[in-house]
Image (tube, rainbow, N blue to C red; front, side, top):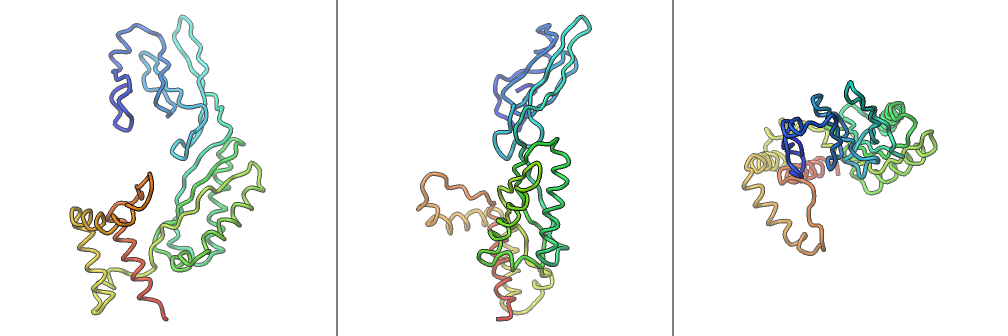
Length: 247
């Protein structure tokens, strides 16, 4: 870890000055999986990984071919990965129906395909924003059926794409500020949730207490990947959805 990069474990820590003081013409660095040159004097390069190992390792992956002569070092990146990973977010705020949603996913895939240098891509998609589709996306089976159709469509293209995940992170298509001014249960609920979300310590304590019986029954991995504030906001959104239904 040259320079103590905060995003990585402090593995074999050193500085650019340490590398420079050793008198080498070229440093081939390892451990950190993001490819790139970090110093011109001396030339110091992370080759990254030859294949992205998981969804966090997006983009081109490969190695560097290096030439050394009396004028110094020159490196050329060569992509070796069989597939690429890619994570994208679609703002569903302006989408009015599932045909528009399918078109948005297709467009995302077409753009990614044009940038993939002919390589297949494993794609993860998050749907975000306040959307008119939120309630329908939360109905049982809707998202999984849509994912099945999109997978089949993208697997038939060249190069093939595998949509590994289509995750709904949309929120109700309602004006929560207006709801918060209402008298009655919906307004009380939104105001109460807002106070909880603003109180970080209180939110942590509440969510820990509420989830403890559930997480205590789960073996091994117990992390749910959401902050207490996100859990409370999603709970509020769900309640507003239910309280806003005609039936």
